[in-house]
Length: 272
Image 1 (cartoon, rainbow, N blue to C red):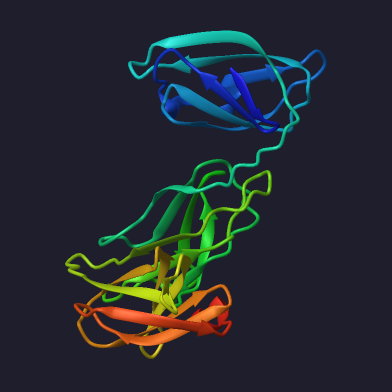
Image 2: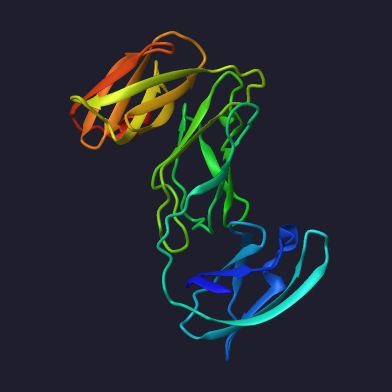
């Protein structure tokens, strides 16, 4: 039993727990005068390690007890004590599960920990008006705001998030990109490229693919970017890295290179 931060506890059991039976009412946390509310229970690195999201703890002793079931539905009970902590969580959240590829009619994401569900900012490329529907404090679906915002079968859609979500301790998420299409017979080609400033590869940045409108987003790592496209015709790519930017004509099955100059651009200008 370990207090990870002022709002996170980790229970470690001798075997895997049936996570479908986990419910905050199954566990109780008390101190000498009060009860500490549990907001969410979820598995950590394994089903034998369960994280509890609580109201803020104090630096005082607590007792906790509860009921669990193993994967064979055998019931177990526990009771133990631990020292609470007022130390804040400083770890950035990240996405652990997400929709990707063909036969996907909506974006779904699951974060590594409990999130602030009052805040979620993201881009959909090509542009669609999707709204967040939180299933719990970790899992979220992005649903059409209106029927005309439903995803089309002939299009690949990209979800791009940068500093777009934060956990309950205000730690901002890492940058994240995924792409999906409802298409059931999807056979994409890879459009690859490399970005440079003078003779040096770009360490990090973002690339936006477009024709008449923005069509895709790629995170640059070690100078490289990649998109999934449906043809070998020419596209335009814009690359941003800090105060540098560049534009080039690119195509699948070609060696694509983008040279950046000292010219600052905004991702909002490229996508919106």
